[in-house]
Amino acid sequence: MKKILFTASEAVPFIKTGGLADVAGSLPKAFRKEEYDVRVVLPLYRVIPDKYKEQMQYLTNYYVELSGEWIYAGLFQLEYDGVIFYFIDNEHYFSGDRIYEDGLWDLEKFAYFSKAALLMCEVIDYRPDIIHCHDWQTGLVPVYLKNEFYDWNRYGDFYQGIKTIMTIHNIKFQGTWNIDDMMRVTGLGGYLFTSDKLESYQNGNYLKGGLVYADWITTVSSCYADEIKYPFYGEGLDGLMRARSNNLSGIVNGIDYQEWNPETDPLIVQNYSVDSFAELKAKNKIALQEELGMAVDEKRFMVGLVSRLTDQKGMDLIDCVMEDICSDDLQFVILGTGEARYENMFRYYEWKYKDRVSSSIMYDNTRSHRIYAACDAFLMPSLFEPCGLSQLMSLRYGTVPIVRETGGLRETVMPYNEYENTGNGFSFANYNAHEMLYTIQYAKYVYYNQHERWNDIVRRGMQADYSWEASARKYEDLYNMLLGW
Ligand code: ADP
Ligand code: GLC
Image 1 (tube, helix red, strand yellow):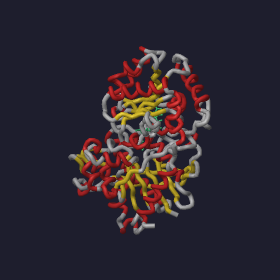
Image 2: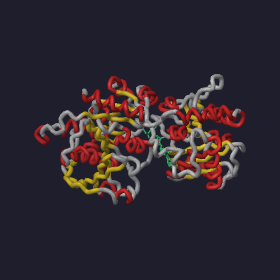
Image 3: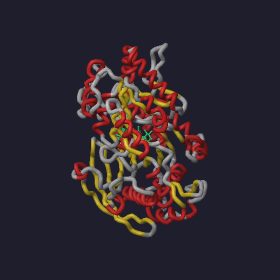
Image 4: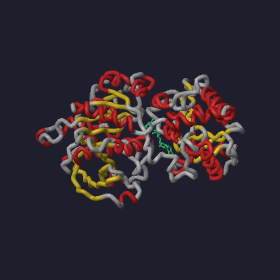
């Protein structure tokens, strides 16, 4: 049995701010249980719903040394959907209203979490073969492991030989701060803050530490694995990505086919399948139009957007041509939170075009399911996109994605080819608002004038396999390769 421990700052169903949580919560289930024992360790945030906290079982407590201080760690466990989740409890660090707060505080919080997660292994005598770390919040795991925990005098051979993988979900977020403060909060020695280790552009950098010390690096699509070797996408770490390119691979994300299933989804008004979408899917559109107070018309072309409202997601393109998008033969349904200027833009357009624009500036899982089910098309014009899960959810629900050709979007959305009648979506190449607008208009044209063709596009999307099945096998191969088995 190969033992794998995921370290992550969020995972569904406990706590989620974005796609990282979907991956950390749903990928562990997809491994072959006879051969892989995959567990997850998370912070026990106060904001995790009580219904989960009530089911957790207290295991033990221990003290973590951080910068010369001994800090309490309580350890809880919950088996969910066949996967063991560990939760590290410390109210000082994890009792905020939001899971990510500010600057140095987050850095201290995740230094503590990384060390507590490592120490947990010895405390409960669970020695993983591989620790699989996700994003900058757990970038210090490989660093602490190979520096402090490899120390024979303190830990004997317990931690020796444990392999680490660092998965990049988004290279833009790195966890950086000035070196003096970072040394103080992490307790890491000055010798680690050099340009071949944690130093990056005069600052300390958690993600860089993880990328330098991990045995292997993955990211969430092959396209993004290539892109981050170039300055435009590499966010300053492209040189390191080129240097480590022999130990870097891309494995595309999947989605949880149980949770995201239009045939059984309890959160949507009308279930449907690839055989019945043409008759039944529109009932979800009518229900959503009623729920949101838009003009009720089952034939109207409805475009959805469920997203963090940030520059990454191409919101400035939408801002540029929003007036043109809001034509009277299109409805635009937005669900998201993020930068104030984009939240206000969408609120303004809802006020201006009440019948055709609906802006839900909030985080709401149920509404997201209803939007994926109700809309005809889904807009995702990202500037960069490591993988993207929203387009996969849309495809699964027969909602045709309109995307920019970048990262995981380029890998999962095949543009419609009208000559060969192939493709599962629409895409454009350049980061240009009018190219996006043209692509939306072209999709709308096909929807209104070639509806049979439109249904073919929907069908191809719904029939394709975006579950974790294929990608979990690739992670298994990687684990085997690292363990030499
Ligand atoms: P990212 O992780 O960069 O935000 P992804 O496409 O990988 O982008 O994942 C986003 C996830 O978050 C999807 O599951 C999407 O449905 C969900 N999501 C984003 N915004 C909201 C929101 N306002 N309400 C509900 N779900 C949301
Ligand atoms: C990040 C990326 C997104 C990806 C998700 C899960 O949040 O922005 O593209 O799908 O992580 O890997």
